[in-house]
Length: 257
Image 1 (cartoon, rainbow, N blue to C red):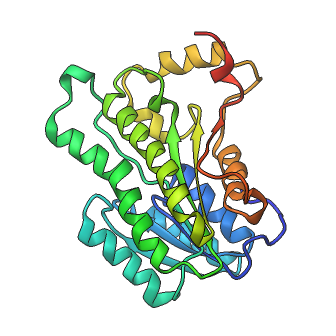
Image 2 (image 1 turned 90 degrees about the vertical axis):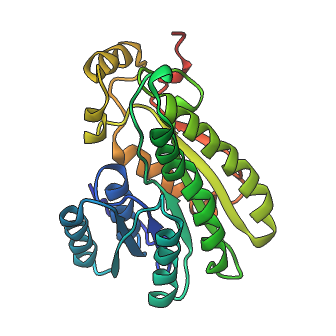
């Protein structure tokens, strides 16, 4: 859902990886609604990405559509080369793309582990290195989307949880190293957000039911809730929030298991 909001990002260029659907789609539309020209990144779902780009353009903003496997360093580099060629700058880098092999710890294979870590954590590190080079002298913002699996145990979440823990560590290190460049780096950890991505996890209906039973608030988290927090964290208003991983969960993490 796109809301009528102030143009906090007028004149800015924003990249949201994995922005063809779910949280990424909501993020890119909201940045565009607040004045940004955007990069709509996708890997597999080209039709959905083109629909998002069309929606961005209907808002009067420019959408650059780029296909790239962020687990492949060469293709990740091409993504940032394309942004530099087309826009000449990047003001906000949001690492939202995520993947994983949903297995128990004793069933995780090396190939699945490498794929998950490369998409979820390594891509953020390498992407941050490239993004920094094309961010303006007066700074910018980076945001990494994490999950509760970084610190809690969920069924079939071993490789994803470990990769998200690494991602959160990178947020802290990058926040310190990029502070002199006035680039703000934070993370955002959402509860079980109601998107189609949940369909890929075994026993998710039971897990969601258990989470809903513990939820102190009256509803689950939505992509709109995540976008509300993300647009704040990437704005000058969050200048003194640095290297933090902010929870957006309706209070469920406050409840004793």
